Length: 318
Image (cartoon, rainbow, N blue to C red; front, side, top):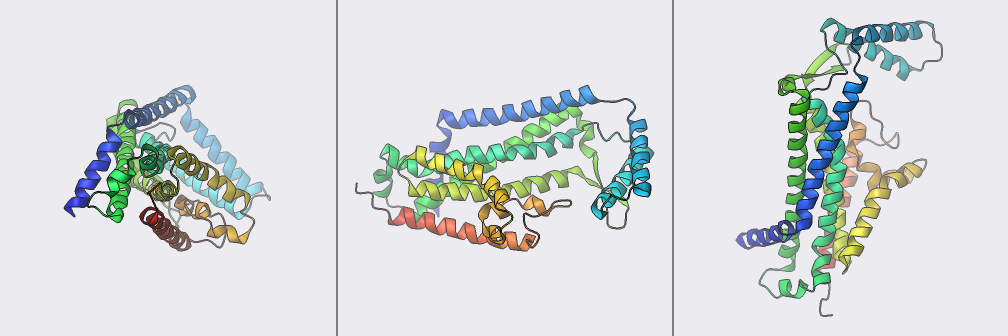
């Protein structure tokens, strides 16, 4: 175990001693700051002092539509009723729903986890392939550590880098939200309507962590896939290119093939678990959260097995 710890430390040194890594971190912080600034600018530009009147008029419009319109389906009616309840709650408790608080910025920053994924995929795709590109793979293999331990150390170090980027993304958004939205809004509640038609309050941090949690699932899967691809190529540029290609076109490909029942077995059709959150819909109607989790678990095991076989059985004599 101590040798694995030393190997992980060695891989971390390879990651954090490169200027590219710190440029990535600064780029992520800048992206969070830019997103937060745009949100604040949009809020100040569209802020309306007559928000109470607007909510009242919105309720009147929806109530009239529910009473007179014959074209509304059940889903639209449920959405209108829910929004009426929320608007009424806002008016009664003097809450401006358009005013951004600290957790609004943190909640929105979850969208930037795709950037965290891309940056980590670049590192993951380079972890093994770069050893062949630089010619250092033979130096690693002549040591006492087994190939399995070497691969495990590289994978652990890569996940550690992903965790660091996630923490930086969350902390940066929290700081930006506190500066722009006020740290006093940290207790701002999240409102939702339960099955009984009652508006209930919950902490915003739960909602934000839930979004981050779902995004972490896709992050781990894409990183593991990139790690497998890195094991297959001797060129780091090829490994990075293929990893990013699969990541960027995967969801689009699944959407294009959504009319076919077999598309539910593709990795990209199951990787976004946020589709099973309240208000979301899966790619196929027969898909469930349990099914997607089982599919992801199967893909994860396959990726790990293939990466292990490619790395441990590869001939490096040439």
